[in-house]
Structures are given as C-alpha cells and as structure tokens.
Image 1: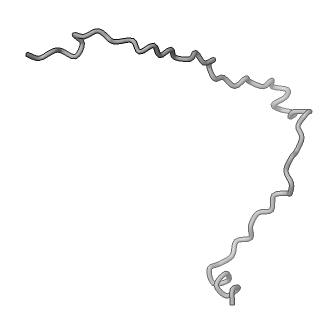
Image 2: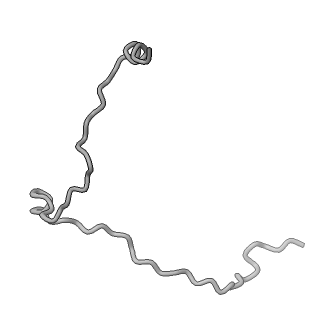
Image 3: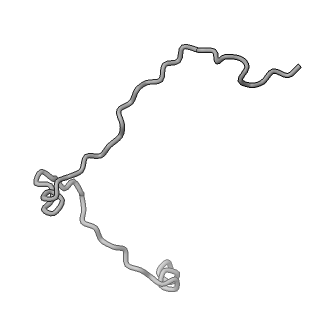
Length: 64
C-alpha cells in the first residue's frame, strides 16, 4: 500500500529562523551626488599609472 507524500503531517524540529532586517542602500542626495562627499578621505597610497602596452616581440627581446 502506498502512502502519499502529504499524508503525514510535518514534524517540528524546534528550529526558529532568525529575522533579518531587509538589505537596503540609502540613496544619497542630489547635491551630494553632484558635488561629492565633503568628509571623503583619499586612502590610496600611490597614483594610478596605466601599464605601457608592449608588443610580443618587444617583451621577448627585453628578457635577453
């Protein structure tokens, strides 16, 4: 005799799911978006320098 899957009631194991607040990023004001954050501190240690593109042959002959 077959027993349907929903025939037995669910058994509670005592697990209570933690209620988490919804994740939401607050919108910045239009003025702050246009003028920037006055309290911003630049923590970069060096300025950005793009790498110079080399050709395959130049990089091959450089190692000699």
